[in-house]
Length: 315
Image (tube, rainbow, N blue to C red; front, top):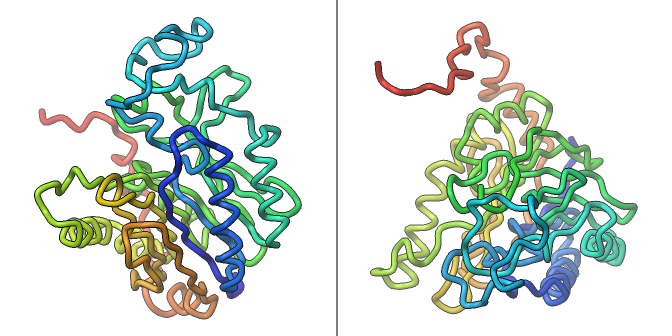
């Protein structure tokens, strides 16, 4: 690993308006690059707008409620909103990924962002792409879809890759993925120096009876409950990037970057559009791994067989 400056950029995307969202990504990437960032990270489903999958959308489902192509979507899919296949794209050849590469090239940085991906198996995946000025470095598809709503739209990914970005290696875990600590440990074992954690989470509705300021504090407390543990236990940097709010509506931001001891290096102070830049220090990483608390080397894998058991019911 080498010292590298990383940005976490949050905004509220426009509903199913890729052009507007990519323009905002370009604007914030330029700002982050101007502040010295070499890697600029955006939230889950940044490009299409995550509200696409929220129940209760005011927009009628395209196609009058009919499936565009039989067999392309789960029978459980009966929620309002635009049909996911109308906005899903292939990666890397789709127009949104190609535009993301242009943004990376214009600013000479690496850019990471989320979009709905259509693959050759005719399924849609919740995918996060990493691009450089030279093209696509890699992609990750969410492995733990939220029970219910997400299973109606996405096929789950089946791999936990680590990507070499030159100055550091990163893994990606999307939103609900981050509540499965086994995934973080696997990425750390595979050599990740940092884990990018794109989210759309902690909505205003969770604390609707509180003031916006109090709700933001509650969201921050909830995030730090698990985020510090993920960074500390695995001796990795954590780049948490969440969707911003619009006024008092929507998610509550709190994007932040933590070091391998769980200390906050930088965080967005507002719930609205914002970005922060932090330097990930190689010295800090190696100090932790060599002298402080490298728990990875003290593991006892022969004791961990029950981790693979899925039946957790009482006898």
